[in-house]
Amino acid sequence: MIQKKDILAFVHHIIRRQGGRSDKRLMHPEREWFTGLALMLIVGLCGSAYSAYFFFIQLNRVDTPIVVDTTAVYYQQSLVNDVLQTYRDRANTFNALRESDGVALPSQDQTSTATQDAYPSGGALRAQ
Image (cartoon, rainbow, N blue to C red; front, side):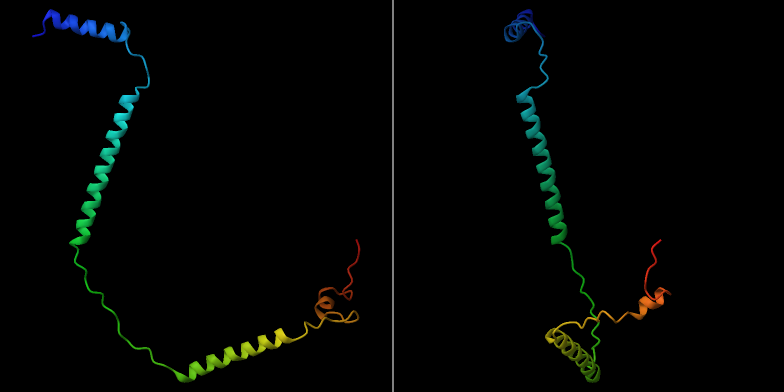
């Protein structure tokens, strides 16, 4: 049972420590520090436990063999020759265009047939 002297010692301790006032601070650095450390410890332990669990699950897993279809692809010499010839023709055409002087531009007196077909008046636009 609590004696009178214990209660008085408790009261004197509070009065000496806080001057009779209650603690109205919003921030308590020591308490916040230990709360943060405790939370980080809990998160670290949970992460470690999950990692260990996942490690042992993967360690004890039995891999099933993968079935591979072993059908062979047949080599068709005629098809390969046709494709190679097509690419050789493209390469020759490209090289010929690259080595030419440029694109021949139409002269001033030549008109495009597309222009004449699009505009019945011979290609001239009428101002409105």
